[in-house]
Amino acid sequence: MTVNFSQSCEKNKIFILNVLKPLLKNRCHIVEIGSGTGQHARYFAEQLAHITWQSTERTLWISDLSEAISAFNGANLPAPLPLDVSEKEWPIGPCEVIFTANTLHIMSWNNVQQFFTGVANVLQVEGDLFIYGPFNYRGEYTSNSNKDFDQFLKRKAPHSAIRHFEAILALAKLAGLQLVDDYAMPANNRLLHFIRR
Ligand SMILES: C[S@@+](CC[C@H](N)C(=O)[O-])C[C@H]1O[C@@H](n2cnc3c(N)ncnc32)[C@H](O)[C@@H]1O
Image (cartoon, helix red, strand yellow):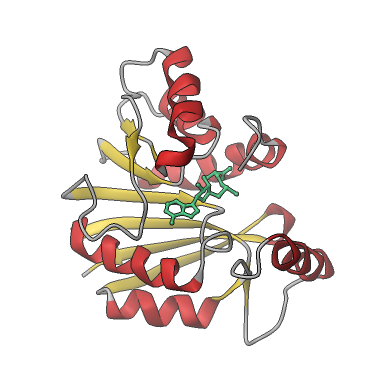
């Protein structure tokens, strides 16, 4: 990530909020993994004032994120925490909700596995996990634009790829997570909602 503004974040944040809002009315603390530019964190913290939105990011990018978060100056938006999913002990938890957007297709498959191990370690029973992004189903792209995007990702970094929904489901199951909803979102994205059982 070398930019501090994401056009796609601006477009998708409203649609994500529409799904999250009713589901989070009784929640008060969320941890976001891979907060990037901080646009989601800032917007959701503003729109969901009853929730403390804890952003996190890899050390490499955390100073950019810290700047974006401190400019917002929201009481429910604490300073970001450094967190790489490959760390054995995440510096958070127990968590009632974990949110991540557009991260699983960027990180390596090994990191995706570590992501689910980390979630299993910190997400409390009956806690929610939300994962936003593109996925393939039954081994197929869901659109030509996702196919092009996957090729673009792989040219940039061979370890990146749109993930297979079924493989994510299998990792989630191992982590004790149950899929409760799979929302179709604009631009061929999905919002997966899991609950830790
Ligand atoms: C495309 S950006 C998405 C940022 C933001 N969530 C969004 O929706 O715009 C991918 C994010 O994944 C994060 N990421 C990649 N590998 C990671 C890892 N091993 N641990 C934690 N975050 C990681 C990157 O640092 C970056 O913030």
